[in-house]
Image (cartoon, rainbow, N blue to C red; front, side, top):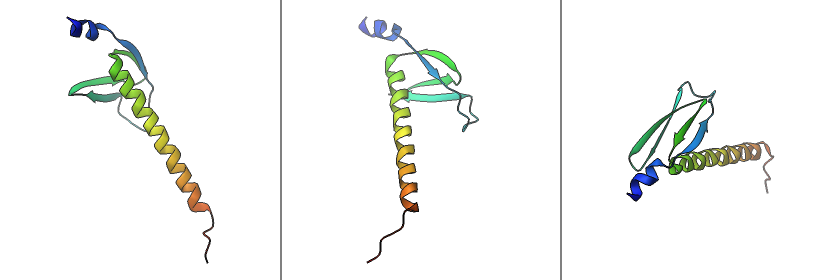
Length: 81
């Protein structure tokens, strides 16, 4: 019965449109359970799916920051001895 109660607890998750992707949906899979969420709309999902979406977005942002830092580093003159 606890499982059924947990499945009923849903949270709102808004997935923004992504100009870099032509796919109108976002695919998320956690522990073999798949979700296809429409971009530009709010969907009701279990809390662990929303948490995974936010974790992935944070990871994507950190990766983009590191790439920018590395590109800036390549513009700096190299010290030779």
